[in-house]
Image (cartoon, rainbow, N blue to C red; front, side, top):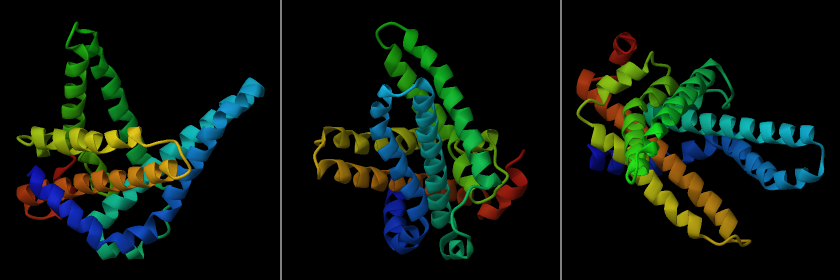
Length: 234
């Protein structure tokens, strides 16, 4: 399944690049604003602690909003296609709030799994492998929420049964491998913008892979995605 999803994600991102370009400026603009504020945050060290705290909160809020909005937009474009053209401009609704709450829940799971790092010698390897596997199995809840399906973590876990390795590769390993070279890019006038642009591109591709994995597995199980409305909550 993994190779099939990668191929389809590449073709889907290319085919729907114009639709993505129309839907992504707002969330990507929020991400850029968060980056600018984050770069300016060290300057706040000369000011009272309240200002530093407010700036930190603003950066976190902007990053969260941008992350959720980008993910929702890409999932909807990948799964709904031209029907997304009827959507309003990307904004924060109950859908995005529900997405963010599930994102926080996954972060809690990640923190719990970090306990495995306490094992001697191979602790960190065990923790990273466990996080990648568990997050991969739970992650199909996000494309489902993005297209307003009544999905749950339990549903995602059942849907990915037998596909744990593929989900680990798609959600954890491949994105990490793609991001690693960006860390070696220079902090120059051309290196920083290029790193940001490539980072956005990799993020969009990774989200598209998750969308196509959701589509592939729901289609294999039900024959059509709409069946998940009745079955997902169970």
